[in-house]
Length: 197
Image (tube, rainbow, N blue to C red; front, side, top):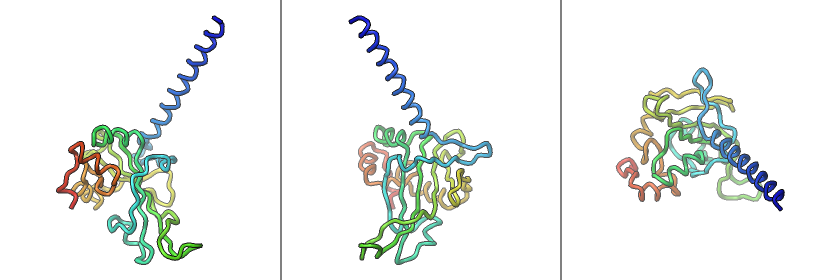
C-alpha cells in the first residue's frame, strides 16, 4: 500500500511538471518575438488565439482600396489568449499584447451559395503590438508581405498609427468593433465614447 502511494505521488508530480511546462510553452507563443534587425516574427499559431470579430467591407487600412465593390474584403481580428484574459479582468490591454489582422478576399455565388459573401484567399496579414519599452508610443504595427516569416515595422508616420491613436476606443485599439469586449470595456470604465465617432 505504501509503495502504491509513493508511485501515485510520483505520477502526480510528473503530471504537474508536464502541465506547468505546457502552460509555459503556450504563454511563450503569446509574447512577441523579434529578429535581430527588429522585425516581428510571424506567429504561426494565431488562428488558435481568441477570435474577436470579422468585418466585411471595412473602409480603412491600405488593403481596403484594393477591394472590389461587389466582393468587399473580410477583416478577421485575433488576439493572444493572455491579453484577452487580462482584458476581461481589467478592461485594459497589458504590455506585450499582440493582435493579428488577417484580411481575406470575399467571393459570392459559389457552389451552393447564391447570395451572401464567404471568405476566400488571404490578401494580407498585419500585426499590432504593445511593447512599452521597445516603442516610443507603446504600440507599433507590422506588415507581413506575401506570407513572410517576419513582418516589417510600419513607420510611425503611417496613417494606421494616427487613426488608432485618435479613434481607438480602448487604448490604441478599435474595441468598438469587438462586440464581445465592448461590454467589458464599458463595465470596467475604460471605453472612451468620444473616440467611438
